[in-house]
Amino acid sequence: MYFKHKIFGNIFNIFAKFPVQDNLVSFIIDSNESFSGNLEYIKNEFEKMGGYDFNFYYKDKISFSSLKKLATSKYVFLNDNFFPIAFMNFKDETSVIQLWHAPGAFKKFGGSVENREMLKLISDSTDFLIVTSTHIEDYYSEAFQIDKSKIKPLGLPRADYYFKNHDISQLREKFNKRFNIDSDKKIILYAPTFRENKQYNNVFNYLDLNKFNQQLCDEYVLVLRLHPKIKKFYSEDISVDGDYVDCSDYKNEQELLLLADILITDYSSIMIEFAILDKPVIFFAYDLENYLNNERGFYLDYKKDLPGPIVYNCDELINVIQEGIDVSNLNSFLKTQFDFIDGNASERVVDFVVNGGGKNE
Image (cartoon, rainbow, N blue to C red; front, top):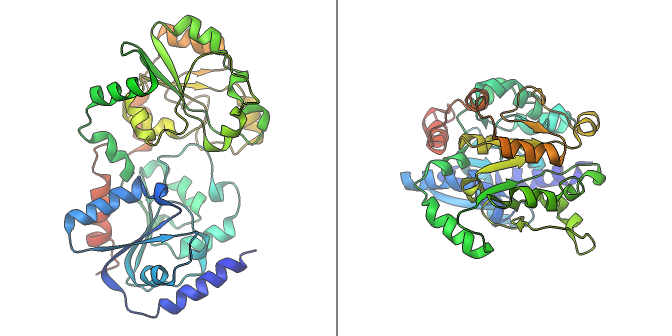
């Protein structure tokens, strides 16, 4: 099953015989798009320090030059799983750091669901796993099959974005012009996640757009952000009756969160980032019982621990928006997901691996 990963690891191990370069930092990525976020913020911190060279290893491309650089890097960062790591023998001088792309702990994943043997091999070759809070270390230890001593609650580098000096008015003005939105309307961002049960992926079977717009359009505009796996359900074959703004392909998801006044989601960890902004979240869980019984499950109690109201149909959704959304438990929720909310996660991570990680002492 893992034959190709073993072959890759064996080729890598040949290059690992060369000496490590103390100023070389490698990033393991899928594409240019996957570099944006955590990895980009880490690179920026190294650039501030100066004196470092960078290597971008693309998972889907064969480059012996890039592979040699990966094998001789002082620091290796990745943002998701890369199975060949299970068979790659990095030198002791190299630090392999898993940043992970999602904040906090919400839906179960990885070793909490399946594939524990392979994940354990990967974690044996990983030096540090960066998470957002001490409260979620047990969950990540299970998900990655990694020893807790390797887990470091230093924060989510990509979350530093929300602490930059953004000109929200200018961003909103550009957004309004691009999508022909009235400047006096508030934005409701709807970001549903993917379901394994296909019948529940057509969200407009459950959200009555005409009713939604009729009762809310004077004050709000609905912006849709579809999960990439469910965009196929919105082809020309499906007739969507009602107005909305489709931002499924909008490049900067974090900018959408900045612009949104309200987030509607269901089972997506996007709500954890949105909570940083101290803005209301509604959980539109029209298929909750099916999801609880047949999908991955959660690390928290979905019906008790969420930082916003749960609604099960369109009428309840409209009613909650009209009556006002309770945000009183946002702060207590954030404390379970983040040890630091300060915009300095990237700096903490780089300082740790360069000065305090214990690999270069």
